[in-house]
Image 1 (cartoon, one colour):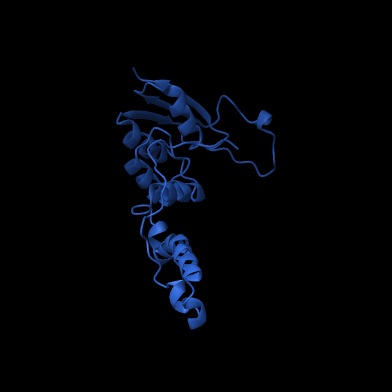
Image 2 (cartoon, one colour):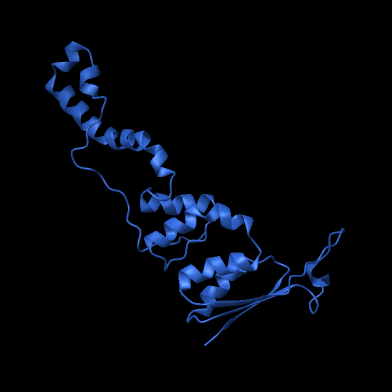
Length: 185
């Protein structure tokens, strides 16, 4: 499995001075509370546990892509099959993850291609969709599928990185649809 790096996403770090709402030092028997070594150990342990408690207290915010930390937003994107592109900024990633459920309902349509490409590329997209489908009641091999009269999609976009556009659009159209992506420049 390849690792995708997002240069615009930073990782969460230790919050200096974070306090646990449930200090361990206050929960030990009086005999142990008087031992300076035990007290120092428990204060250090509280500092380690505090971020986990804060994360659990705010867990609902971690599941909302509009307000979650950037690395968690990318992680949620992997849950909902959002196709996060390495060149997107943080706002585009958040928007993509938040709208993945709506995009899934339009999967395989010209509307899905247009809404996926236009906001990211800030360019006009011309999509020619044959509008046809293939139906067979028995399983067949892709080699037996009609190639000339079958469904097809042609995408013309004014973009410099056609290979990247090809990868994005390939994930949006069904496997049996003939796809052509070309530059409109």
